[in-house]
Image (cartoon, each protein chain N blue to C red):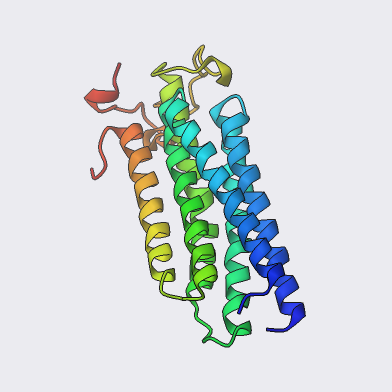
Length: 93
Length: 140
């Protein structure tokens, strides 16, 4: 179904996002402060959402969108919970 | 699938990949957290948005049913990216102000001036009228 132009663009985008995931992992391991690590996890999750979407296009199936949506929601809640814990020393006060 | 749709989808995919890569490159390359926040919150959001729009065009163009999931994810990411960036900046400012794992590249190590209402920067009591009572864990 996919033409050569589309498969080329898909391969390019997949390579870019894989490289982006590696760069976020580098910041996650390296990051000197706690905020850097939270930001790296947040970026990592957003990159994984993009990867899932591209995989869905490559496989021509819409099954993976639910997991991408769930991942977006869980990532947001996790980031806010981490930051809340750093700010207040507690998550639910 | 028509050629125009294919070109449009391919362009959106390339734009999405490049912007996502630039965002993460900024995250890895920039010197301090306050500058690092720029990459993932702006460039990566645009990149993921472009990928989602490409997917939103691809499925109707290839004859499958249109679904609202991509639009939901796009709107959700656009709504939550600034909020999580603000939370990270607040937590970082709080920790730097109290010299908890300080990062010299930030330039906010030497202590911040007190906020006008008393209390502490970037916490709920910072906006309150009276001086704040911090929880015991954060007092040092």
